[in-house]
Length: 182
Image 1: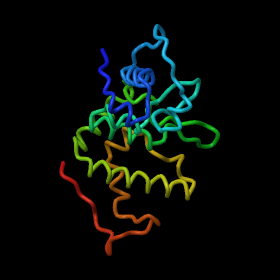
Image 2: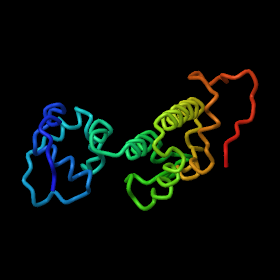
Image 3: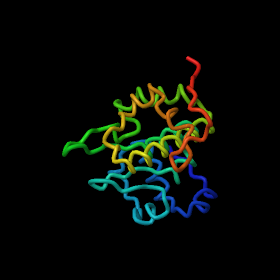
């Protein structure tokens, strides 16, 4: 059963078919028996979906913000930024599972939920640190040494980048130790 808020449809510029398509995609329910008229290109340009390999549809923050819980939005935000895989010496290393709800991501998801709970400010801080780390690793060709997501979360690795400005220089006078409550 899907309730459709027509005001939301107008606000998002969606047809009822497109909304049903997006909701069923979010719920991971079958779309085969339905004859929905959906313009995937329009949905992608609006920032609601991303069409991946083999035409797999991934929902994006532009739509998730209207239907997902605050934590789910933060989790999807982390996964949309954290690299899926890296390349080193001709080999590929997988850092996390592609599907946010896969069993392979469950431990990481639970760990992240323990870390941020519903604290959007903490999530935004972690995202800034992750973006700094990615920027520095790309500049120094060190992306191949990125940790797997679960390890990154367990080690609170973002803390290493919390005192760095956008240019990678320290923002504190002394390079003091960062501690956290265990």
